Image (cartoon, rainbow, N blue to C red; front, side):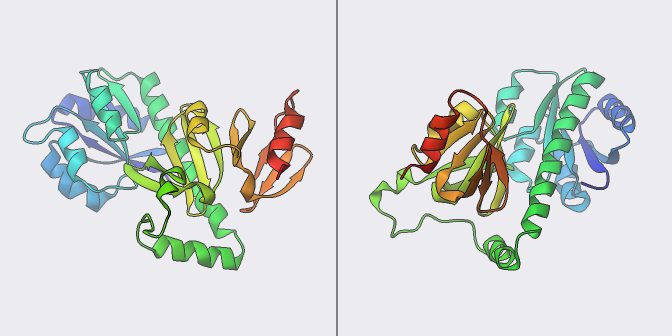
Length: 267
């Protein structure tokens, strides 16, 4: 990832703006992109500024921060909700906000929140670069997929289709992902990354939860950080598994290694 991460502040209280601007100025990789003092201003400014981060207050006149999230279209922005009321945290996460900061905001919690955004933006950029580095035919196929409409459930699928895909929430959207299109899943503490034929999705979930959603024996957990679709494997060499998209995942060195290999290779 290159360049600075731009930050827009949406809050009806001037002291909140001053605090956030001060905290933003302390990190060289953040840049202040502007301020909005109500949701109506934000509706006009967000499409114009296209910020990477929106620091969003909940309690504002006319339209609340939650109302704004219902209306605004900013697919590339990460929302960090700011409020003095912790009960709004649950509401915020239903909108797939990236982080929640309780006022008064301390630098340690601020740093943790923006570092999470920096990591997510970096992961997204890396996935894009990897997609660009695929062979030309694969790149063309990826471009065709990206230009296609949002995936629809084909009518010709059998009645058992409910067992062939799952819904994943990412980037404040819900994606229908077919199990057969998933290469592997990677754990990132509180998040997981789902690598599939259309790219990568980052969603709030645990590896244990993903393991219960992915069908066995097609998906095999090779490591505490990886769940692999064995139908998407190109090669296994030692403790490394090379997937059809060229990416590699590891097999944990443990007493269960032989069992994992059996699960990956049995017909």
